[in-house]
Structure formats: C-alpha cells, structure tokens
Image 1 (cartoon, rainbow, N blue to C red):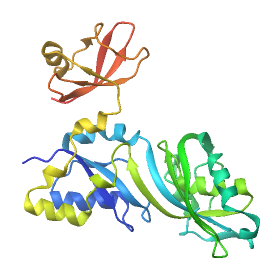
Image 2: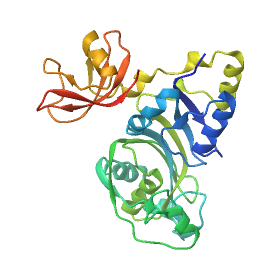
Image 3: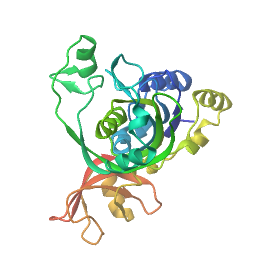
Image 4: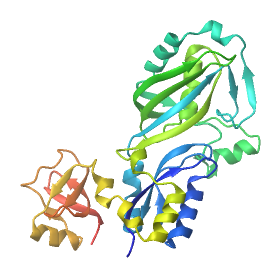
Length: 303
C-alpha cells in the first residue's frame, strides 16, 4: 500500500527536524517526505511530516499557529538565548526584585502583534549566509526586527526556590516566532537577564500530542503493516482555509488545471487561497480566488 498523508511525530530531544525526516525515510523507504517547521535539537514535541503528495501542502501547515510550553529562567543570559550557549550576563538576588504577579503581568504585555529581532543563532539568511554560521565565526551583525503575533500567553507555574527563578508558560503564536527571543524580551521587560530553559511544541494548528507517534512506534507499525491507519488525511492540512464544494462538471475542469467559474459559490471578497473539494469531500486542490472575474485560479491540483 502506498503511504500518503500527514504523519505527526513526537520529536525526541537530540534530533534535528532533518534527522527525523532522514530516520523516517529509512524506516518507510520513501524519499518524498518533508517536515513542516524546524525545531531545534533540544526541543521536543509535535512535528508533522508530510508523505507522498502531501508534501505539496507543507507550506500551508507551516503557516498554521503553533503552541508551546516553555520554561523561562530569570537571572542570567547566554549568547544563544537558551541553555546551550555561553553565559554573557548574570544578576544576583533576582527573586528579591520580582514576584510571580509581576511576571504574569509581563507575560500579558506580550499578547498581540510584537516585534522580534531574530537571534544570531538562527537559520535566518542574511546576504546568502545563515546567521548561526556568522555567529560561529564570532561575527555579530545588525538584524531587522520582524513582526509576529502572540495569540495567547499564560503563566502555568513558577518556582522561586533557587537563585534563578524558573517560570513555565504556555504560548500560542504565529509562525516565525522565536520562543528563545520571547523569553529574553520578557526578562528585559522585567529589568533582568533571562534565558529559555526547556521548550515543548504542543500543537501545530489542530494537530496535538494525541495524534503523534514516536519514532519507535513508527518503526513497529511499519513492520506490522498498519502505519497507514495512523496517517492524517491530506484534507486536514487545508482544514483552516476557506473552502468550496464543486459539482462534478467543475470538478472535472478543476482536475484538468482549468480556471473554474464560481459566481454562485461563497468565496472571500478579497483574493485569497481556498481549498476546493469534490461533492464527496475529497481535496481537489488549492486555488486563488479572483473576486472580480468570479474565477478560481488553480495553484496546486491533486488528481
């Protein structure tokens, strides 16, 4: 049986996202596999993989909001903004300066659209070179701030028993948000250096831990020939997009890559991506709307 769909993996610590893809390729003996959002090696959690034709939908899953549970450590900072770096600053007696209420108020202040400066130890490209490559050479360059959205953020618990208080919080955010940088910025708003401790991605869109398999489970299920039963359908990757149902004649034209008239269909008033489905609910493809001419323009077709 040909495997096709979305395979949500619970990424283990110590693996890069590319490591996970390489491992699953070896297990499944399938080359056409792609991941839907880079996670640093020390980060665990939800990492959806797209298999077969589903790889054409990677960008749509990448655009989905992400949710994380993060640990914020107050009182010192590092050059990588996490515990893997070299300490660059320390501040003593931090717990005498702060309270859990102050931290919770600071977290709330980051809700909405915020600006972040990408960390030097990141994969952002500047003049064709990754920032982390420059950082490893000892070069620090000016980076442009980027706008990201924090949809929700809440304090989960705090521990003030050590010299460096630890705070756990949950955050739902747009793609491209650096939680390491968010931790540093929260510390800065409190007037103290800060660093990110542990980080777990708890969801990508509506894909959560309950859908995920470990790499060991993938191997076992593949041996048993039942892995296909655990794949999410490709339709789930487009569930967040506006959608239209096409009658058989328009479905036929759409599958041929033709523009489809949609004057009698409910489509967004401004140009946007929509997912087109057959009357049976199967994904036909992704289309761009042209409200003026009342046409659906094909972008990606799934025969």
